[in-house]
Length: 321
Ligand SMILES: [Mn+2]
Image 1: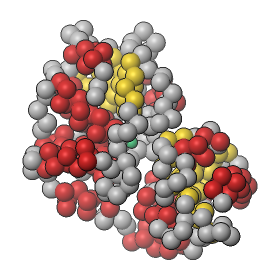
Image 2 (image 1 turned 135 degrees about the horizontal axis):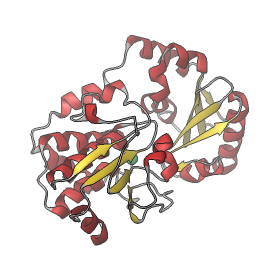
Image 3 (image 1 turned 90 degrees about the vertical axis):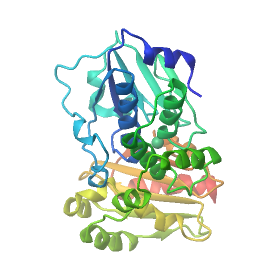
Image 4 (image 1 turned 45 degrees about the horizontal axis):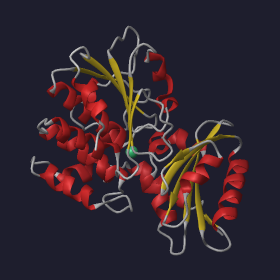
């Protein structure tokens, strides 16, 4: 449940304008929690400005209010800032330049790796997603959820629980979803828009990516690669994760699935890590300066793709095999 200090800060009369941001490489939970939080604040009579470094991926453009998200931070002023779904302030990328030291910073997050960077911190690692936490804020503040808020919260839940499949899915997650359905949201439509709106080019590229599959000799670690040449031809792939890593984690006996994306030529390699149960991929990601959750995490490592793959796979083998 949200701390009283947080509720008081949100209600405070002198806090008229809130700045909201979330992590780079936007996905359903980051966008959903930002937009639902903005809806909550507006219902409280506040102004809410959402700023993100990245543009929203196409499949999320249906989210109500998404057109109001800003990427330009010049001339911004605000009374309090809220970061959602961010384990650290650095996760908002260039948007950190908009933050002022003389304004309170509120941290609402469910990553176990959260650094507690805020002046007010609400960190709940047992929440399935940040959207679940924003739902509790509506309830704690007695604010009625509108249909548009319900769409955003439901999208975050779908996104972070792998459509109610991952271990983070609790009875609370389902109860929240049931409550959201009372608002007349179209769950089939939301599912189609997020998961069944891939381009032909993306699906063809998937074939090439699956062709890169490698598995450790004991079968416990499986990994896939997305080469930069493929991303250049099909930029949407850079933000595609769960649809791809699914094929590595779905193999019988696999305990850790890894996806390596060569994001820039000779530059960074983005790594997505997924556990199927016993392995802790938050710890594994932290070895490489990343983090996240026990079952799902990420890291960015500088170096040539082949070298990064070797380093990370070796570390995974050491821990799991
Ligand atoms: Mn999340």
